[in-house]
Image (cartoon, rainbow, N blue to C red; front, side, top):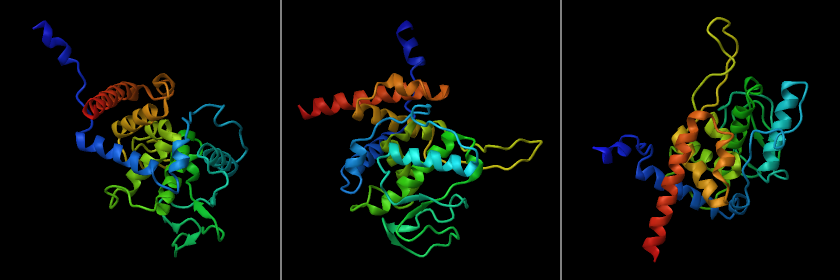
Length: 256
């Protein structure tokens, strides 16, 4: 009976083998993409700290611009054509450009200047910095997908999911994981104030696995990630890191 006790407390794998294999496939595909693969291979872990996001601003628009510029900086995209545009609906036109600098007709009235790629945002996200950063990272990644020379595995219907995995590879996984719940912000039952939400595509377990894979491939100490993850995510990350290490050992054994 005693030998069975440890099994009672073993965490059941949150992701099925197919989902884990697909995440690995997306990481491999993105890392080998000629347009943005080199950028992803040089990515570093970005954290919700004053060191990574210094400064304050007096207005929501100025603060959004400050955060957006830091997202571009950490993503290695400071010289890119991405520009912050006037607030509009988060999903008015999720991919308004077929390639960097090649426009297609847009229904969004806040069209960016010619030669730039506009990234919209909702002002209600500005006080919630992690949600805003996750939103910017995903929207940028979504537009990077349009520049890919080869389509990613299982693209159709999974654009937002793939964009979030690319955003994790850009270094923003902590922000995406911490804001993965579909929770409305800036609203309460009594005041009925304005609301906004970061509409996440991937689950927390998906993102915990992707974060673990990012840590493994970039040599990031797991403790650095855990220190900035929301408490409910830490056991998931620990479990996924063990699973990734086991998968790596089995792959090495099979190759021997």
